[in-house]
Length: 554
Ligand code: N01
Image 1 (tube, rainbow, N blue to C red):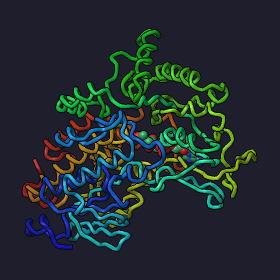
Image 2 (image 1 turned 120 degrees about the horizontal axis):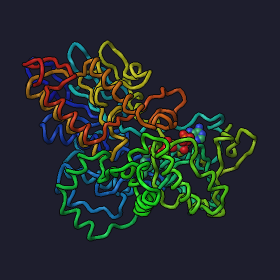
Image 3 (image 1 turned 180 degrees about the vertical axis):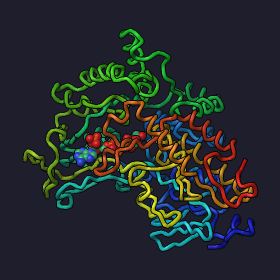
Image 4 (image 1 turned 180 degrees about the horizontal axis):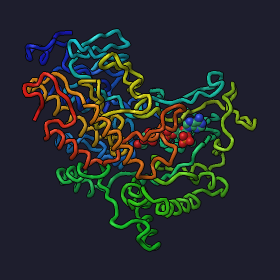
């Protein structure tokens, strides 16, 4: 590696191999590289575990994988020409199309030359003597950098439950989040899908088309609303293309990174006929409107939430022909909207097919995986040719905790986070100078349309780095007080809602032993952005800087 820009030009600083090491080449890492290198003129190296760009969309290639966000918003907005030029084929972008888009972005902005693929960062240690990060990889790299920026994704550490006998199974085994690139042919096979979250909801209808026999093992039924996917009316597309500035202005100020707003009145404040009408309109429209664009009181008051639940229960009963199966598919014991709401393209209808079965593993859990298949606690056994684990991820903290990130005094980030993540703004952590975590825990990220939050995170981080460079600051890290206040603020926001009442990956509840702490931030996209902007305008309130000419960057 050659010594680079910032380390040398600052004179008094120790030189580093590159200014920034960026981990991951998904939406986050690609844009971060573009900002740091093409706009700030710094040097950077991206390490990516996969063999190509895409992040989530590189790994999640299961049948039916597509974003649940409308395609005109599931993309970058930072370059108008890019947004105008790219045409999506359907309302929601499919996995291969998103990957093609990100490949196009990498080429268009000349990013490939600074990305090293098939390389996993294993450790990063902050050297307090030189104020630099030393990053090592499983490919044998050892590289120093002033900034360490993670774009590792919030849902990238796949979770396979430690079932007894899991390795004894003689058939094929897959995880939705690590799908074989060459695809899988289930034709004529007996297939098990374990799990009923967003991945299973997308995969089941397509696996059902191929498999001879398909059994879905469901622990928790989900509230699932129609996607209503398909080509977008050319008139709508044209109108959108003409409203680039308006759309992104609204989206950046929005609650969740979509063109969705809550209704003025709550579900408890309107007559039942009006409620039914509003919910039905959103049900027919498809997408997240019924969740993130209807009644805000459903997130706070169980009685309000119950009204939407009843509506959704009726829809399940309409779609699923067998009443017993329908009852099993009706969620129980958790509020609507506090568990990630999957979008449906034929999931419920799949259970009307004679070769598709639903098995409840809440009341009768999986006891073991046998050489032939799955055995339940009551002794019932099932035989399969293939098992698909649609069992999700160690969300938000998982991907960061897999790396040995050591800050001041050699402290490991995962040790600091034993009781749950401790961050300031979800992007920084005290004792870990010049570390930035795009879409980190306690950032809005997963409770928003991801690319919108990613752009905001990246732009905020780039602003900090640019300001530090301009003012000769060497390190930045949050104060303990600012971090404590942010952690408390996040918990207060969550505790005011119904979110903590549900066992979800938002709460870390899907991973045995993980602390039960609400992981995302609930400030909402617009207000969170305003808060970050205000912090920057106030000279990086809550941060400590060293090496700055003025001691603080006012
Ligand atoms: O994972 P999940 P996912 N025994 O955690 C079950 C995003 N995403 O990959 O609910 C039996 O939702 C588990 O049961 P339970 C999206 O944000 C986006 O589907 O914990 N079952 C659950 O049913 C999403 O939320 C998109 O009781 C076990 C399932 O496995 C997130 O990724 C598409 C079990 C896991 O569901 C994760 O979705 C796909 C056990 N021991 C994903 N352990 C789009 O945008 C776990 N389960 C389209």
